Image (cartoon, rainbow, N blue to C red; front, side, top):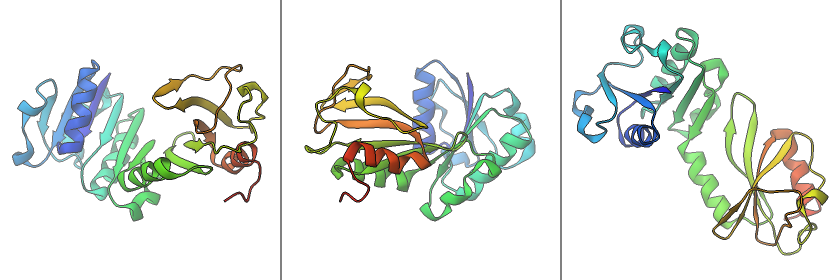
Length: 223
C-alpha cells in the first residue's frame, strides 16, 4: 500500500516508520527544508514540497496513494490537504490530525476527512479510560461510517457479571470487539463470561451508546 504523509515532525515520522516496518511504501511530504531529514526514516521516500499546493501533490503522484495522512501541526493545512486529496485525486482513505480541540467539528467528510485523530480528545479519552468505571468512554470516531469506538469498565455490581456474552441483549448497531482483562486481550465468543473490572470495547453507532450503558449497567441514570 502506498501512503503519503504530510508533515515530517515527530508525529509524521513516527507514523511513517511504523507503516514502513509493516511493509508499506511511504512518501513523506515536508515544506520546511530544516525538517527534511531522510536519515530519520530512510525507508521512506521524501519530498520537499507544500502539501497544500495542487502542483506539489501532482508531483507526489497522490492519485497513486491508497491513503493520505494529513499530519502537520497546522489544522488549516490538514483540512486543505484532505479536501484536495479526496476531491482532486480520489484518494480512497484520508486520515487527518486535529491539533486544536475547537477545530474538531470541521474535520468531516465535507472536507474530505474519513478519519480524524484529535490528540486533545485522545488524551482526554485515555485519562477517562484509566479512571472511569461504569461509564461509556468514547475513544475515537470513524467518520466514514459515523460509528464510534467506545469502552466500558464493568463495576462489581453490573447486572451481567458472571454471565456469558450470549446472554447480553446487545442493542442494534453495536458489536463487542474485545474484552480487556488485566493484560489479556480476549476476542469474545458467545460462551465467554464477563467479569467485574473487564474493559469491554465496542464499535457502535452514536445512538447506541446510551442503550449500551443501560444494558450493561442496569439503569440510564447510574452515576
